[in-house]
Image 1: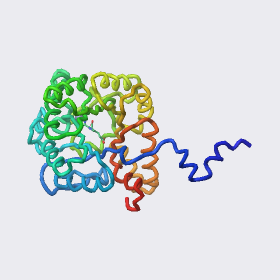
Image 2: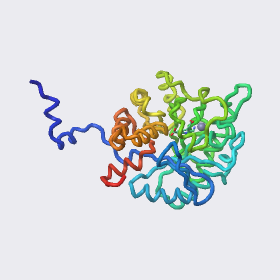
Image 3: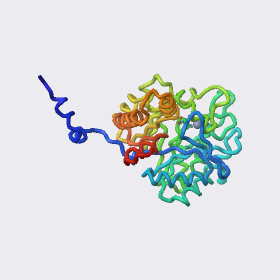
Image 4: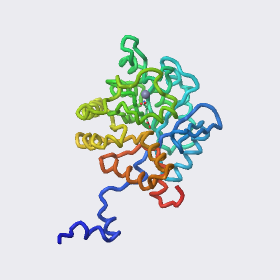
Length: 327
Ligand code: PBG
Ligand code: ZN
């Protein structure tokens, strides 16, 4: 009988020799949520193992991350006060700018990406300035403050700006604002193909960013659309995005592959909150082998075409990749 496939699967060394895709700790960006104040650390019920932290605790967390070999984080801010235009995000003393300066001072070698959006900072929870006629976000008014917010991040020490608001023209606007302020060398990783997904549910608990009315379907993408998903990323590439992104990841493996094959620009995927929590809760219920399912999921993203994986599993995965027995 024909034994072509069995023959190369019997020996474990040969199996490793023939493994086509390998995860490594360099693939990961770990999300962190910074809250104003001191000595604050609160676990989020819907995301076991994920915390809101004050900056002193984030600085400690970065030590642990470096010990695990994780050298990149993406930072989200939870401000003390919110208003209609998200003023905290436009102020040099806001939660993100302050945290950035302190983190970069304590850990100059940590690569700190900053999420650039307004939903955590506005009292209505939408990703920009509202236009009452549209009953949605005003595109161009938001572009203006996105540019300002990007310059605030840049001045405070951000290593890469990651706009997640899905406004048309956002990469052009942010690139112009950054270049105009002398930050021509600061890269932009665009959330270029971001779907209006219910998988963001637990994130909105941790980031305190649920919209107070309606949903985000008037700016985020329809999950059913493939051609538009590719067009979105290609548009951001034309506007000068240095890295593209697909978000969420699990239900969009085909889109990851499609975009990978449509461009030579590097591609990130965001393994979002709901995807993380599903595995955590299934593990709690005793229905899956958590570590194995997690590693299988992560390698799947890479096989699909991801160069970068943004994931809440980063610490646990790094620990396994290092061969630590503790996870
Ligand atoms: C903000 C933002 C969101 C996420 C990342 N940036 C939420 C949203 O668009 O509602 C989701 C991340 C996650 O679910 O882990 N625009
Ligand atoms: Zn947003």
